[in-house]
Length: 124
Length: 346
Image 1: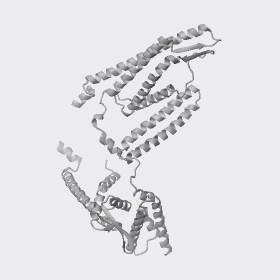
Image 2: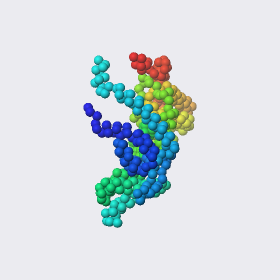
Image 3: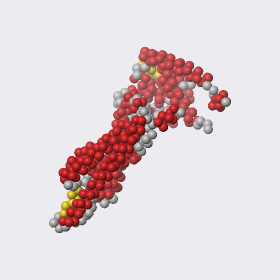
């Protein structure tokens, strides 16, 4: 029985969810406001829903990983975010974690036979 | 400002007001200012792309992408669950057991009342009480677990747990929860009757005019405290069975102790019967015949004697069974039965 598209989609979202914070922290090494952050991430193939992005930015700021300030830009007040010193340290830590995970997963995924049938044949 | 611009500005104002209304006062202004700016950015980008002013439907679609006011506000406030996955595994069994006990006690209690009072309405009232009590119990337990969730109790419970707490994997069948639940309910009703929460009418035969049957107060007062202690202990044991239905040595020892206690009470009553002559007294008034009262007294003397023997045999059998199970378990070396251990080796 083929795996349903719903299950695949749920797994895909679950897989990506944890990486969003890393993407946001990494992008905010240079200062940005919410909309430009979203479009820049979107341009890199990382879609994030506004409804989730702004609360996440606020939470990261409360945790001391981001700093923000209101400033006028193109005749409108906007809130600009950037990585704090603590945020930069956290980003380094998380990046190393991500790279290590990526290496481990790479060796697992590249080495594993793709289909159960291949397993069965090798067992015979 | 054009009509179109007024309409879209009004829509944004209404959305912002609805979100702000649902946010904690502290920080709300700041959050909605950013939300308004974010909506403005999206509208601006859309207008730049299309080379014209956004219409009301387009603005509505942009607002919708930020979520309904309730959802948008909730995303800014801490926990978005009542009981999280750390605490839920403990919550669900506990709430089922507590609600089950309350419902069972209410139903059994009212059925007893209904039967003894010949008023079927009592049973209906019992159902009502069971429903109200269950809802109340559900609410209380849920509130406690919500507080535990907020206090981070789930992680602490998990940290405190060790595999040594696992129940023994014995060949004795675990007790059925429903059976235990009703045993507990009966026990609760018995305790309530024993301490006089509700009286039972005198249903002792014979219902002859002029003759009354009552317990001998002096003899039974001796048994009052021991019976109460044993009944409460038994109720605690039933409650423990609900949480750990598996047979264990501790459970067996407790059961043996309770049944020995039961034997002790029977012995006390037998002593009292010897001392006071009888446990149940038949009294006649002026109109009843002395020989009839005397005959009934003899009959009740025999009945109480036989009942005491019956109880003693019952308690002794229970002690014997639990002792045998305990010995079998001890002979198996550890708390696992030889059967289970054998399976593990193969």
